[in-house]
Image 1 (cartoon, one colour):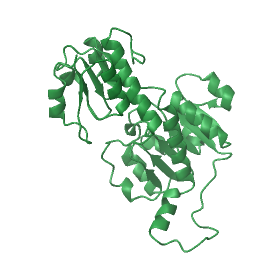
Image 2 (cartoon, rainbow, N blue to C red; image 1 turned 30 degrees about the vertical axis):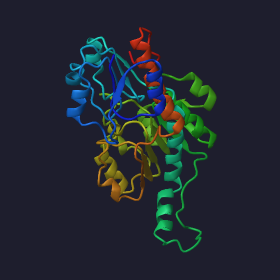
Image 3 (cartoon, rainbow, N blue to C red; image 1 turned 90 degrees about the vertical axis):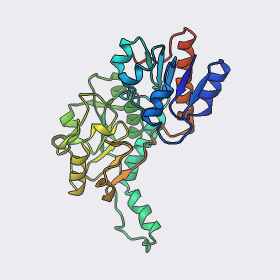
Image 4 (cartoon, rainbow, N blue to C red; image 1 turned 135 degrees about the vertical axis):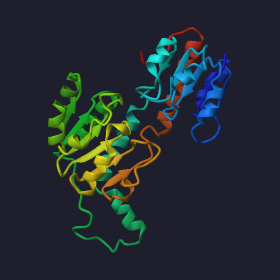
Length: 317
């Protein structure tokens, strides 16, 4: 058996593999593994533990004729050619559930940062320009009595709805399916995408990235947002057309945006960096000790199970 891990992940994964006598190697540098090295390291792997930063395409999969499983340390798996992996009888797994709470927490943190202008406030203090309390200094808005729109009512979307509801918001959600539990617990209302965009005070994205969601929020859709709206994205950057987003932010056609993911990650649109009405985070939605340990443990367990002839815990198909 040979397992390659594309990045250093929490120690719990390494300990699990060692305990089960499964040899492994991992790329030790802090940056993403260069493509050339990755292609070399996966040669004849029986298992691959990958992250979103790695493109697992047909070329790479063909380097692993004996591969039984690709375990992605993430909820999403748009970095993997799923159809080709399936064709090669390779199991693909992800790490759902275990990062739900951390990502939902961060979403609400972004909502509050935008609503209460925390970025501007901290900059004011750090630049030593704060001259004392003023009645109109950095006035923000409260969440209470606002409409909080959820785009994608899956695990994370539901967890965000729970938190937003506790602030006294009314929940709208857009999803392919109706979620009775969401409606009963939080009085959520299923609406069309157009209604959600035109009526919501907060719009929070929790959709997977695929052909139908790529640039879902383009110039036409973004123009539907209220002038007072706050847009939040902790899902995938490519769901928003960032050029169109910059335009509406620059022209103050929405109140603010809070982003944890980007269209060309890790590259950040330099135009966004110039704006005061956007909060920019470095993709830390699942960056808690609890979540990252659980993600690593789940990925390693999936590999161990498959290599020992057992079913994986979280297959994506």
